[in-house]
Length: 263
Image (cartoon, rainbow, N blue to C red; front, side):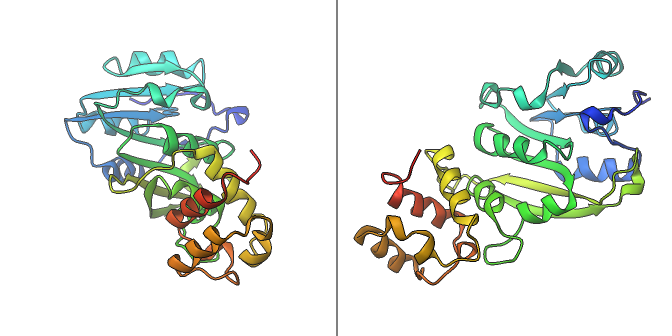
């Protein structure tokens, strides 16, 4: 039986009511007995029961709501329940020797920040999140597309992203005003992660705040022989716009201009 509780607008709570969608989300995580699973904002336990049915090695629940957290601990005694704001959780504290998978129906107002932190700091190998549909489209957007932007380039610097499926407002209580999307992150062992995530973020944000301008105008204060040589090697033109650069190329751009870029 799921935990019952009235949704709080202040916490951005919209509880999933459709069991088929809940199962589909959990199935997307492909849980095995070797996996440790962390669920963000389990709420009434719509996903939690299906996670436990998949029999992971360990299940950790992070729930901010001080009434829901003890109810979840009572309902699911085999899970470790942490009553905490996920925005304050120290993702680096997760044991990297564990095969972590992270899942959650993320509140719209904090989803981007949460995914930002998890992508950069957690040792998770796979993540499945339900987010606002527009956010899901932007995060999974391909290089060169209209939706491709700062958050696409930054998160894809750490992992491969995939759009899975759309979810209508009618399956939540209370109903949100917009559709949701379920998306997946895959850790890419072949991808060299940024050594300075914050510095890379500043460069990406700087470029995309002028997304309709050409790179030559955006980067005019940073033009150097080494930058021009790198651009030529990468097949990038000064007439290109920011969306022409792949996540890996943004890392290369950062390496070229980091010494001159304001911190």
